[in-house]
Image 1 (cartoon, helix red, strand yellow):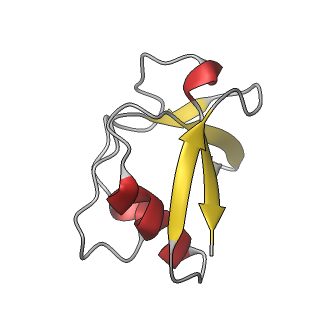
Image 2 (cartoon, rainbow, N blue to C red):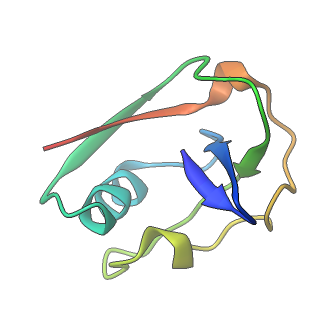
Length: 83
């Protein structure tokens, strides 16, 4: 989940890949990470079509459609596992 404008929301799996998972985990202070998808919670879906470069160290700076601009359902939420 990510927080935008004071509200927690989810990240859609469209375009999301290993590089985005690793970037998200690095942002949280971990060295690696992986992901799967499935219904996480209700509420806003904040990020869709997330693309991160291998050098991205702050997940929130990865390219995406724009905050809240999405065409997803919560069955496409990212579930992140960091290590």
